[in-house]
View (tube, rainbow, N blue to C red):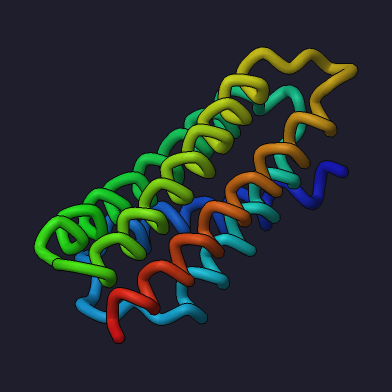
Length: 143
C-alpha cells in the first residue's frame, strides 16, 4: 500500500497545479473526464493516515468545479425561452450533484479507520458523477 502513496501525491500535485492554471475558453469533455478520473484515483489512493490531505484535496476539486458551475449559471441567465428553461434544469441537476459531492466530502472528513474505504469510494463516485454532469451541461452550452 505504501508505494501507491507517492503516485497519488504526484497525481494530486498535478491536478492541483492544473487547476491553478487559467481555464481555457473551451474545456473539452476529455479534459473534464480525465480530471475526474485522476481525482477519483487520487482520493482512492489516500490512506486513512492521510485523511486531512484527502479531505483538503476533495474540498479543492469540488470548489473548482463549483466555480465552473457558477460560470454556466451566468451563461444560462443570459438565455431566453426554451433554451433558458433547459439550461436552468441542467444547472438544477448540477447543484443537486454538487450537494451530494459536498455531503461525501463531509463523510470523508468524519470517516473512521473502519469506514475510510467506503467514504473514499463514495466521494470518488459522487465527484465523477458531478464532473460528468458538468461535462454534459458545458457541451450543451457550447452548442
